[in-house]
Length: 79
Image 1: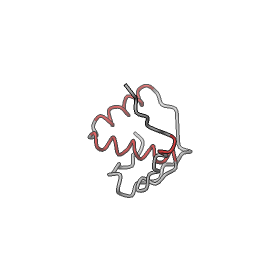
Image 2: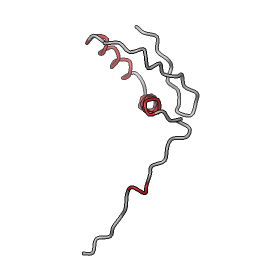
Image 3: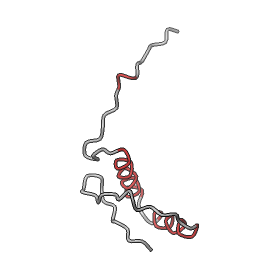
Image 4: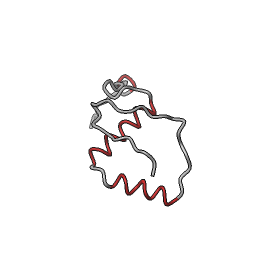
């Protein structure tokens, strides 16, 4: 079983993800991954998801980018 980094809360320092370390998994290995994540609490799973998203998009979790609200507008419907 591969060595796994412990997932912490989003506000703590997390390990950096090495994007060059990916490998194909067998169905059995993928099933073990599912078993691993099922043992984690929903908060731990969300923290891991937030970390992966921030790493993939290249932003700091402590300072996430703000949504550009100028691209949206609201109009009242006259009924």
